[in-house]
Length: 297
Image (cartoon, rainbow, N blue to C red):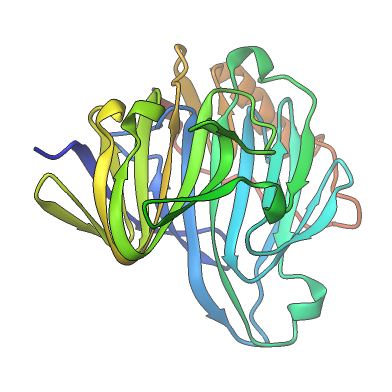
């Protein structure tokens, strides 16, 4: 019998001048553990005149995680961070009480053909940390644990699990694991996991309980402890999850909070342009005129 309780297919979403495949939130499953939002960026081939340009925009109540498979993105924020992220590294920005950042193609790539491919994730903060001071950490690929088991290649991108701990400074119990198979193999690690679990198939396919699932789909486990599946050749998956929060969460645009009032305050602050500024940036993304509030459980 399959342990898959829900299948989520990527849905196209526009983030300005770039299309992404949205996975979370989903109508039937708003969060997986503390993971509140997941976008698959690309793969995209951009011409010399095409660039990623996401102007300054605000966040509260969450941490963002950016992980690239191909290409490069320049991150600038209101704390003064200015860094180019490349494949294998992690950008981890904790918004806390409020931060503003932009994401653009770096200068050295803006007049040449380029590729862009990666994932962006929001992780909700525990209620007691929602108003913490913002922070930013860039973690190089060499600081992420990598190992092999039964012919499969593992990398722990964030969190602590399977006796390994990532250098990403997370704020709750969670895990984000990359698993690659060149020749296929069986994953049987449910006893190591906790909370809720999701599996995103980036490339290839997996089998579970007599069913086969293909790329660009996210699978939500019925029981994390029964997490066991077969990977086909040339398959890449991302296994993620963790302990869910006891309080419900709300999301509006780029804001996540356990408090409706804090979201309303953040909306007004952005309309009034009283959030901190990104040094060197004058543009900003306007607050959407109609963006329904979504309750996250």
